[in-house]
Image (cartoon, rainbow, N blue to C red; front, side, top):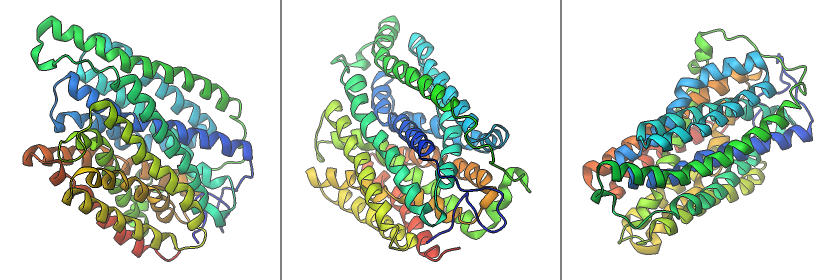
Length: 424
């Protein structure tokens, strides 16, 4: 079993903390940023319809959202080291709130680029919160159960990704009009886009209220970790950590995993709408996203138990190979088999992020904030892989062909699992 990411190890500056109330808050943070991220899967078909976009253009939603991880990841780590974990979480939540409010001018202008800007700001707040949450949940408990505890926390992330898309589909996709956008032009088209985008605005205004309440609650515990310590970076923003093979390969796998997961999630609605797959309408397909993320949630609860008794590296290699098999099955078949085998990949994804994260970050000790910042930069794979997948789909005229790229990502992750099967 692996060592603690941010806990008492020989030579560490940090200490593990037994604080159930803080664990509950951190679980809540996982729930919120997971749910907000998964809403992109609902927004993409909505904006694709409103602005008559192709797959590549629609994937700019994920590109702008996940580019924030590359831009903000390391500055976020520095901010957290300066402010501390709890104050850093508040800063992230308020940034997310600002992003939600930017959907108001986005709707009023009915300009696609303004929606993308709002998503970037929202994602910047998510990055800050995630830099806090991953090492903090590892700090709040015994070192021996780090893998299991982080996987359990990620299950609450998946709970958010399961609930938010279903509700979002009802609020956002449920209002799709029967009007054909390509028959409109000029002022009539602008008015239609403004009216239809109000559904998006209402959803994110509700989130803004929730974020304000959560930020206030976390602020009450801003002094809950008075003894926390952070080691100064020895290299450029801690990038020297990439020289460690285990950490460097793990960071690459985070890039590939997030890219593959997001690419598949982003295409679910379009994939299931295809006549040779399930032929669903937008609303029905949007609700099916819940099964994809719900599988990840169930798998994480199960995985939190399995990872206590089976080598995390071997489990990681096994589920990565399972994802490849399901992708092959989906693209080689039709009907419900094709649809449900794609959705079942969510179950395979379940333990990947927390397991790769904890395997890569074993024994970082007081360098945990640096490691978490770099790992969060690697999450920008969610910007690159979906965009490339969309480009392949557009170039070949086939979504199934585009899914070859996620399959290649899972192959590298399977190798890392076998490489890191022994503790550092």
